[in-house]
Image 1 (cartoon, rainbow, N blue to C red):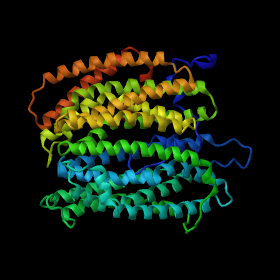
Image 2 (cartoon, rainbow, N blue to C red; image 1 turned 60 degrees about the vertical axis):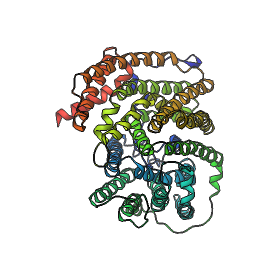
Image 3 (cartoon, helix red, strand yellow; image 1 turned 90 degrees about the vertical axis):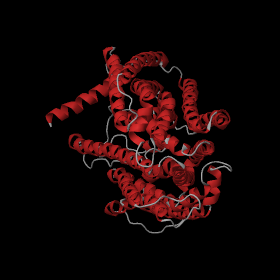
Image 4 (tube, rainbow, N blue to C red; image 1 turned 45 degrees about the horizontal axis):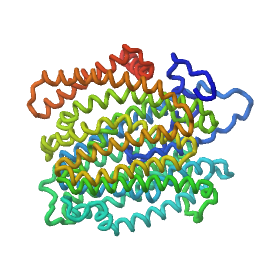
Length: 597
């Protein structure tokens, strides 16, 4: 440990998880985003700023005990909302594959529907998270409780969003040419048609983010947490109507007035509009009243430099996304859709574990960084890294084995063939090794942001992009058309490996000794246990008949997952790896509640 401080108790791995709480404020509040799968590690900047709690009127002690049940309910509700959002979001993406397959139509829709997310981040998203929201919380100290600042923020935000959305819709063909190079096998005409229908999402993404900020600053987290579920329900209903309609979307020629094209494009945009609209009643009930108030607040200058680095991060990361899309468009049709869904599956284990375990470290880590307590920052970083290792290495190993049957079980059906579903599973399998590096990069970036360092994450992203882009352009030169998406997924994971190494070295230079020897021991034990789990999973798969059907693929996934993960985690449990303790404790509590019910 640095500075000669004594180490933390080895028998208390939860020491960095259970935190002192502020009454009425959910543990680890997160500013909601329209897309729960968005890659926004700089959101940690916003989690450092919590709504101020007024001091008690009398010297009597604060009623901590009565506040706890409300806090627990709020935290549990947000966790359930996040899980429901991911489940329903995943469901409609699977339905989309059933409805239109993973060919040219899905590629065109996926590219078009990505544009509003990217443009919103460039136009408003990063600055909103890192600058506007923290200042909104600070404005609560004003005499009017921040009403004037909030009205000014909404006025400026709505004008910028509306203007940016109009320009984006008019420039849809230019954006299409940015993502689809000439001579590619994707349909530029269909992508442009979809883009004109979905680019208005930019405005509604912004309205949702602004209204979420207003609610969060008033300690109202639940409404914004559940709003994405409403969006997903609307899109699921849209896809149900789409599949019930006769005919197919025409590629040659592309007809803008085609009913199925209009239903799909307008339906997904309506989902984002509903997501923003459901927050309006909650904002009205909070007591806030909007009126137009023009002018910029001078306090925004305080965070100007921070906003520039966050914007630079968004720009660099989206350069990589743009190049990835262009390379995928040069391969066989379906590459963009397969990559999008494989990436969704890739992120899922981290998303679940991040919500349940890893994000609990962030509030304490941020406080320790603000206090300049390097020893505790290193302890939190090391503990988070070890938890990620123990939980994600076995999952990544088993995903390598079950990738193909998982793809068939989930995505084979309707307009999508078993061959294309298997191709999606292959993309997941070849990239699964990057799951742990991905989690480590996300954790490392959050450590830098906790130390109020917005520059280093951007520089790390620059390094990753410089490595990634040349390798991506090699894929069409070295691989066949159907294998381009596999090469892109492989390079994506390799880039996270490089990013994790660079981030670790950078943190070592910044913080000193990182307790790497202990982390290395956990990695070695996790790899050994996972290798044994993979061996058992492969043997279990050999005992099953190979019918190639969807039902048999689901059985294969269930059997190989149960045996592989059971053996891997069982070995780690028998070895008494203490980083597994939080997960086993939580599982024991859930089982205990189930028995009592």
